[in-house]
Length: 130
Image (cartoon, rainbow, N blue to C red):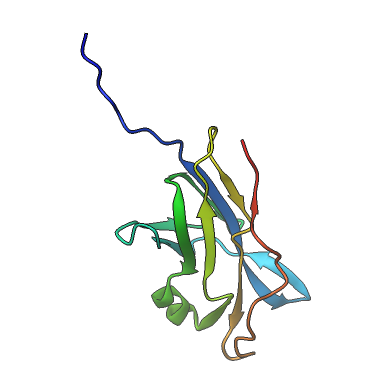
């Protein structure tokens, strides 16, 4: 009998929403926005996600590690918009059932109407063990 050691990890899920701010005093989800996820722990890791029609996004299968998420800068230039915050940092923990990162949210504002003002009150990201 031969023993073969196979490295194994349970991947995580990250989700959030991208919304326009300042339309009739309400937020509106924005579909088709590119969200980039880049690894800090593993600098070769890069994924680009596209938001659903309601502005939400999720990615299943992200390995444990530390990451940043940001709206694609070229996409922001095309939209003539800014993103608040400009980047969100999060950690996927190596848990038995996989980590669930919620609240990786971004607010978009048209540059003609207002300048970027810093982080919004979207709250911190949260980890929900699965």
